[in-house]
Amino acid sequence: SAPRRMASGVSFPADARGVRSTTGPAKSMWAAAALGLGTEEGAALAAELLGEKDWRHGYAKHAVRLAELQSVAPPARCVASCEAGLAAAAETLQWRQKDGKCVSLRDAMSAPARAFFRTAIVRGGSGEHESAPRSEHGSREHERSRLVGDAALGRARGWAEDGCVEPDVVDALTSVAEEVNDDWTGDDLHDTLFALLGGTSELCPLKPLLRLGASVALVARAGDKLDDAVAVAASSEKGTMYVPFVDDDTDASNDASSRKVTADEKQVTGETKRADAVPYASITNDRLRGADLCEQTPEIAEWLRTVFETGKFNRVVVGAYAYADGEAHVRATLACDLILTSLQETLGNERVCSAFLSSPGTAFPIPKAAWRHAKGRERDAEQNEGVFHWRRLVGLVCGGGFVPNCRAPVTRRTNENATEEHRTEEHRAETRTVYVHDGHVILQGPNYALSKTMQNWRAVVCGARGVATSANMAPGSRTRSMQHVKAVSIALEGQKHFPPLRPFDADETRDTMAVLLLRDLGADRDFRTGRRREETTKDDDDEDKDQAFKKNAAHPMDVFGRHAVHGGTWRCPWSVDSIGRASVVAGTLWG
Image (cartoon, rainbow, N blue to C red):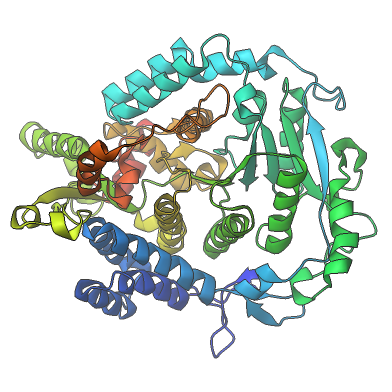
């Protein structure tokens, strides 16, 4: 890898030559996850990937093999593997202070901050921002209708029929529509703080949440995107947005992680000051607004804790929506993870939820129905598309043909959750076929794959720890980050010539994923009141049912097969990676 800029904050370590390469550290994270399985197969995979000579083009096969091993491993070993990969990331990367010295990320996150953020507030309907007057589009009734009204549900049914979303997406959206009905006012969100990290990204649910009346803590850098978010909050009916800022008399460049302060000093300079929030419009210096995820990670975690406690919220949803190019994506992903785990440690798993937009461009198990559909499409193409069909000709010209999307399934033992006394010879013979999908696109690169797989790992770990988690698949969409490179933009448009692939508009994706997020968060709550559903008490007669449930409980990796808006990648006859060049040709010729 090329030398990296010496950025402060979350940083890749320098090697003996002073070069901050990503390849070695990335390999160590993947290897740690493989070794975390505690199996001979895992150890062999770790050795293979550490010895990979062409990592830039060879990483995908190792990532897929790891996903296969995790998907067939006993649940406890699968979780241990994910924990090992995340631990390696937190131990391998460093915190680089502005003076050039490096400390561990653990030390940086545990050091009391001195340059505390204060809180600026934007309240919808307050009239504080004349530049963003309220309109019917900012009302909760309009947003509810737009998100889960008849038109939205009809559109989702069409997607499911075409094969670009899974059928249970329609079921999930319908269940939310039934819960909210015409009397819904959004008051069920009153107890929840949505901490949106990288919250100005196009697929982040910032806009729908604010328009539904939610409370949002926005973490983003100063700029036009932040200003646009402020306008959305101000024009909403009852949305509230919290934004971090620093005082004029505070040196924003202070490196708080490099200094220790006493508990008394922290109380005087921090708690009192931060609790005194001000209207956002009163901050006239743009430089003081916003925060940098990678360079102010400890301060952001502390600021979010304060907003949560002073606002008397019952739970906080930490959404990781930050995206960046190349190695910066890995650093931003890890920064989000550090903030999430910091809040879990201080507030407890019961009050901290996690949210991700999982990527179809990684590896994970998919439902049998999706695999069989793709297999059927492949068979139909073989039978019906002759040697001179344009797709075959373009495929041959662009690299030798298309690769079938359906990989050979693997086998999982399904008795691993049974207690020893219930594990009979018959139980030992029980297996389940698992269909692991390889969605990697080599053009996206190993840093993207690592970043999104780290989020998969965290989703698995959170689920195992009882943390409410939303990690639904989001499709390739017409975002600025996808369209600023002409070849990528053309390829995205060209995918529609390979059914059932379909590029989504950014607002289609954002709105759909926002509703799925709300559905996930309401799974163990009354969606209208925000209160937990009453737990039914069990008696001794339930023990047999309990054992049966444990034996057949869903595997941790199966979470990625639910409510997937994958854009057709699961059900396409060919791998998205193998049709990449042909998509560019099709997009160039036919749009």
